[in-house]
View 1 (tube, rainbow, N blue to C red):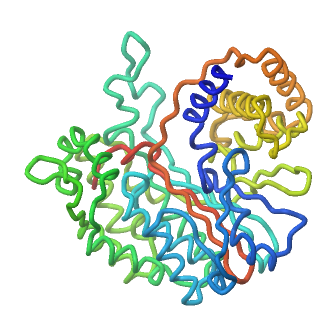
View 2 (spheres, helix red, strand yellow; view 1 turned 90 degrees about the horizontal axis):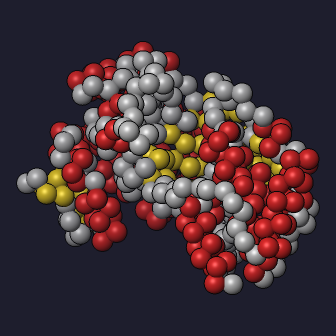
Length: 438
């Protein structure tokens, strides 16, 4: 049992993005045995979240408290989203408000110029589940050999993770705008106001954020924009300091006046972004920004005993969760079973799915990925036999998965009184992303 506990800690550390509270993939579960009224009364959004390990349940203290719906996620963004619901906005309005605000309140996890993200939603009006993909796009100038390797096969200076060449076309604003346009009831001008106020007024830095900021200070010092924002007299801001971003507030105010994010991609703001990339040796151009589009796409899904699990498309990584669930389904795994063998089975299913993710998953627009294979009954049965063997032997499967550290993601879930459900992920990928600032 000691070995299993060690394995469990190791794997849950590696797979923290898979089992984190909230919606790491914008994943949610639609039960066929619970009404909308029952859901709002008892769980206020329980369907929003991962069911593999620690399902998130926000129980209502009273029915009145949740009369307008609920939002869960980053604390400051959550409060802004709840206020939007109280003012008559729907779940999409609330989720977009929360996401924009969280980008200011937790800039290590995601930002306005961040990598991108995904949204999955149920529209009560259209009675359908849909997904929005606003994953980052590589610039046209990107090449397979653009990051030289050292003798050990590692990228020199981690140039694929940090610096201007590591940054692609940011997708967050485009994705949130598309969600608003198609499913929201409020304008961009309305939903961005809390973010503008927070960027102008600033927030007092806590211990965790101050420590995170300090960990990137050596890179911030090499980048003029980052140094201006995060360093004072050459030293990182510390716990108790107020972090303000008036330049960002001004840019967002301009977008609010125009009631659209379009000029972030096509116009004067886009040109300033492209100029910064060129000045610092990056690859993103004005043409790359102008050609970027967020997309509404068909979600992936998996039928379980009494529910359907939906997740965004392949680039979100949601297929990892669905594959693991399909293996557990083949094992007839019972989530209520807290025994050592049941925990071991869950962990091995996650490890096998994560192995496939690292070795085979890619952008389906640029690579052939056999999605049907990874969700097929035959494949699930084959993997389930491996899991059974490992559980019987009381040993981990002989596969290696490197430690996974994802400290750059914010997950938000929202539900409204109309029965709309939303789960959205906005991310830098790594902490503070490429750690450069326009």
